Image (tube, one colour):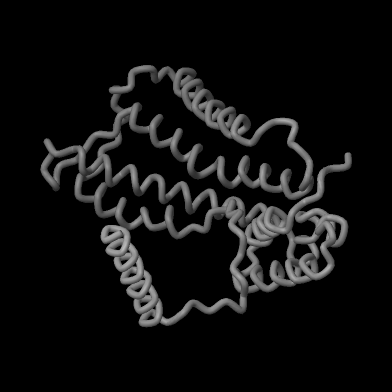
Length: 243
């Protein structure tokens, strides 16, 4: 199905996302995107007509993420989610001494598993698939909006976890699981795992790469320019009041 002409900005964003998912370093992503941009600006051609769909052109530079990379991303993000929730659990258990064991209820397990699905599994499965779908059909309207598929995925994760606990006969959120963790371990262990959530590179990053030749001005120059603009604005304001 033929689509509309694709502008260079959206094309570069989709291409960059596919390259990042394949594990291409950001510096290399910038160079590849800059070459595409230079050609399109010089020729004014449709990038899809010249380079093909973003997903196809990205395959010329790297293969899509392997199942090992996907599983690794899910595991790292999930561990980070567990860490964040452990810190919250430990902080909220203020009635327990730091050396006392805090019981883990079935409600805690449901909550953790749902958030693992939402923040650990969905980004590396559903979101990756949505990005690939967009990169295979740039210029064409999707048959279902991304937000609807994401909402459906979150609902499915929640329902699956709830059904699993119901089948296991665990319906009381306050029911004990026989598992208890010292409060200090919840906080310390959580703080150790939490960085995994933030340091694991998101599989969906559709930002347009910076020009590899761009170099920011030195901080002293930036401050001097900002100071000059501020003085100019104040001078114009004084003139406006005096008029």
